[in-house]
Length: 328
Image (tube, rainbow, N blue to C red):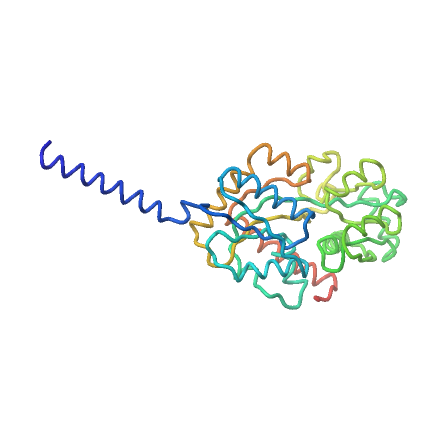
């Protein structure tokens, strides 16, 4: 081999070595190369916890690394969310957030221990779940237009249950009432479970409840579904129309789940994590599992999650203002 040929081979080998070394030193390209911690800011056994544990389990199987789920509970999600903001932004400590922790809370609480836009790095949205507008069968209204007409004939006398002041079930109902031009009487409970129990018992007339918990009572005739609060019908109840279809255009009151890291997460790491999670979410078995919970997969990536946050923050800030709710 000529001197020029030997020199060329040496250059090629050197370039290959440098390239492999650079990849080995690139944290994003290697993610995950050790256990990843996911924080759930709500209690074990709830919907947020259930979703996070299934996603983490499947992500662990795919990557070969342990995915550790930890619940840091308190303050309606504030404790866990606040804790994440103080962690190292290396991609190995993340959290699952919701529309409550990352869009509603700034308007619900007088002060937060974090800024939703400055203290987190949005990674990707896992999925969305709609509410059902449900009434006790004793309520004479069979359709949403009939319910609106009934409420207009009895201003402030039709009652609705919520999981508590400032919760998504409370603000969603206030949003619906404002858009429908009706006045409802709010009956708050300590959680959506007790609220649904009293709605089933006929102690309150109506509530907005997530489809996963109201599905069975509707199917067995203990509650009547008037509408779904997403812009499209739910595959779980395809015969139930949307609020938009029934005349209140562009009405949407959904809940979403999303993955966040601390502020300062490098963009390449942010995208790498999003891509790995989104790949898991698009698997047919994962889609089927989430749909059983009433959740439709999103997997939209960082940019769309950030945009959704800003849209929902503005919307729910306006709802809080018109509802007369006093931030806590």
